[in-house]
Structure formats: structure tokens, C-alpha cells
Image (cartoon, helix red, strand yellow):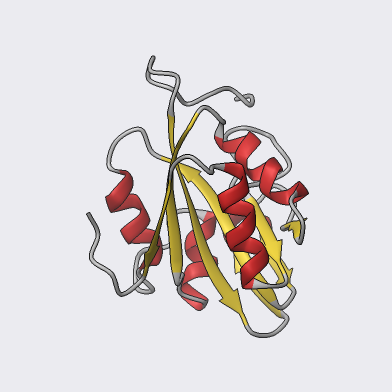
Length: 154
């Protein structure tokens, strides 16, 4: 699959960014990627869901779950603490690329979360939380919503 929009004919993609803090360098076995070493920092995972986005984000934010997606391996060890829902014309791949090139952003492990599209990856590392928040706001200033793990979904 290529970097094409996930639109349903409206021109708007229903994307999300889920973030977790890793307090130290750590190697985690991540499905088909194998052993992946993560540096200390904030990790933002970019995903999409045409339907059921709230449920998908809530699942990502739960620590206990079956390990289905690559992001599950990371979030099972380091539960997500923030999420943004984004309605944007950007595709999932372009949003991840935009966050990677934002001030403070850096690519995560190659291919992470991008098994169905072939782009460099959907996981972005930030050294500081404020850089992550600023990057999300800059990429989707018109419409973004923040949610914490303890907040209700909906």
C-alpha cells in the first residue's frame, strides 16, 4: 500500500496520535520487527480509523490487551498517557512525516507501525513533552483534542 489518503470521500482523514513516555533506554521485542532499542523520550504513534476511532484509541491506552499491533508491544510496557484525535486532509504517513520533521521530532524505529504502507514509520520520538505537544498543534491547528489515559472515552 502507498501513502494515500484514508478518506471516505469527505476529504478528511480520522487520525490519532497516542503518546507514551519511556524513562530510560530499553530494548523491547516488537512482533515482526524483533528486538527494538528505544532511547529515553516521548514516543508518538500515528494511526487512523475510519470507524471506531475512540475505541481504537482507548485500546491503545490500555496496558493490558492482546498484542495485535506493533504499538501494542510498546504501550503494554509503557502505557500511553496522552492522545489527540485529528480530522485532517493529511494521510497517516504524511502526519507521521510532519511530526518527524517538527522541531524536536526524530524518526522512531524504521518501519514501526507501517507494515501496510511501506513508509519509513508511524512512530516519532521527542525528547521533551512540550515539543510533542507543539508539533501536534502545529500540524493540525484547526482541530485537535487531547485526552489523558484517565479521562473517559467519548
